[in-house]
Length: 304
Image (tube, rainbow, N blue to C red; front, side, top):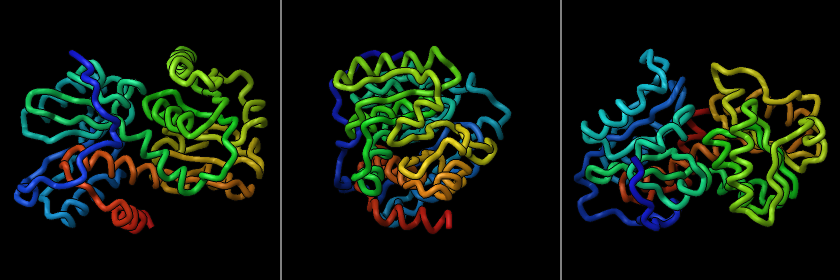
């Protein structure tokens, strides 16, 4: 259904001031995904809306709870649009499946090949990606001085594509991708290699060897999330000089992060990405600049 790509700006480049009528508006948004009952997005968006004078309701649309599969995505997108939603966040496993249901993509979403935010613009559906900037911002703040010449990424899905885009933008020169779906990993490596010509992007061969040579690793899979316990790699492979980053944030301390900290690794939990992708999505949904510090403080309170 994507009709055109109209030279849109980056998803980090959105309106910074509220329209004059913002305080009088009511905004309806939501999240589509599997097993999302632990999501803190409703509380983050609704509280920030109160702080800026908006009335906002954030609806969880959980495929598991509804007894639906990803095949229901077209119906759910249509229903949300008909009911007057301003937009939707999209999470696992729908970030790539949503693409053919959209009319246009931002530059970031087009490049990454995954969408986590859909904005309804009249009858049009425009896809954006705030995941990559959501990962990049806290990484710069908390691991900005860490070596990142060689990075191992676990997960080649929609979140993995966004995180890979972010870490290459941040200067990684060798990115090794690990995913049980070899075709998906190869496709992502080819896409990234065509855009980041100064970097070597490849599918991991012997994963343990890749980890042993890496400066850091990122988990962009659901493994470690509530309902998906475990670690994407053997914790015995971790060593002190590695940094370890997560995108999972419920629970905030995953099995992987717990093992990494016990071995002296520098770590980045998934909370920062959860907050910063929400900052970007909130701007897109409302046209209002949220207070990112306030949103993170609220998030940390929620998960403490």
